[in-house]
Length: 138
Image 1 (cartoon, rainbow, N blue to C red):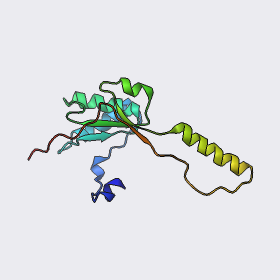
Image 2 (image 1 turned 120 degrees about the vertical axis):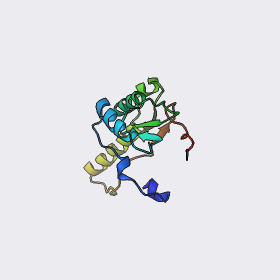
Image 3 (image 1 turned 135 degrees about the horizontal axis):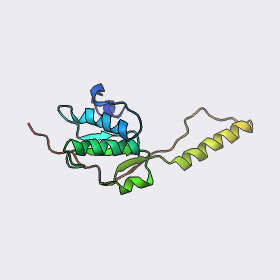
Image 4 (image 1 turned 90 degrees about the vertical axis):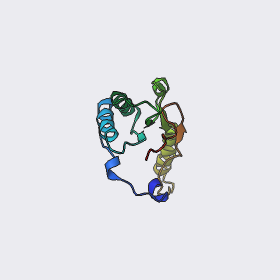
């Protein structure tokens, strides 16, 4: 949606599905980082897969974030201890759980509940694994 709002067409070859563990992140990132032109950033489904993606980048001789940025999803306390510390998107899970319980209790009490998604905005936790992309070379 964000790409389309920016007037860009999503490219299916820039999406790699994998398992949500270190091995899956490694395999998916290896495929993406071997593309020509190579992506300047990877957005990875969770912190564990991000560890594998970072390992793939290093194995291919790439520096994080100078050559490729890596951003994970679902922040975890240990993400800040990786090398470099991993930039992540943090979901406010406690608040999301509170809203879900409020909806459930209202339903159990026979109160009307609007059909709506339960959720709150995510937070970008900026650490050292992401930077501006390197300059384009002709």
